[in-house]
Image 1: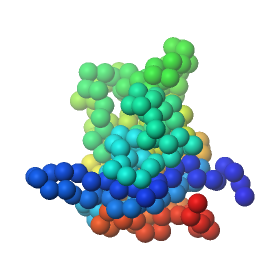
Image 2: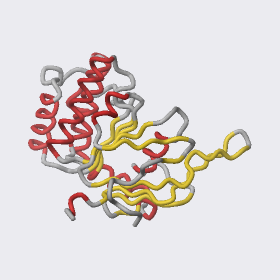
Image 3: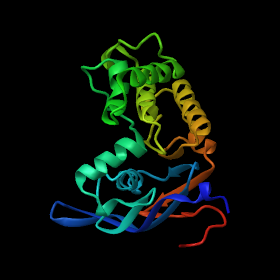
Length: 237
């Protein structure tokens, strides 16, 4: 077996409950999930099925009510908040539907953020940020603020920022959800190319059938549970 295709993400018996309006709501119910190194996986399902909640747990942005998440050999539930933030900064890239760019920073400055968090030397991080912005077609927009960019351009900045730190894993929540069809196809193509070129594990939530069709594997969610949670040929560990 190729060790580079061993699981890099494992969710074990994940349960997530929220208390709202005086009652308890179960969003995830015993989710089991495994994603291999370098795999491109899409998570699909109706609204309210728990897709975004699952992604937040896998990123360590939220803690499960029970069960555990193991990412690249680290049990996220055993890390402090600062340790988890540091782990994300060095091992993960995140792409959101609503971009989450800092409005007072230029496109270049937004992409520089993860590189600064990693403590890379100034010339190195600037060169890398410039190269990534050029790679996503924004080499001539580096000094523009997010408010001066279109939605598609902002999402491209988000992609460049997510890949800036050379993450082992990229998690994306509806990365084409706020884009028109043509721009959505361009962003989907960039995700696929960057995943393939850098062997980055890509796990994304989407309602877009065209984007899901690009994935190696599609995981279906409904009612807080998943179907086909394991790669083909892999048993429960």
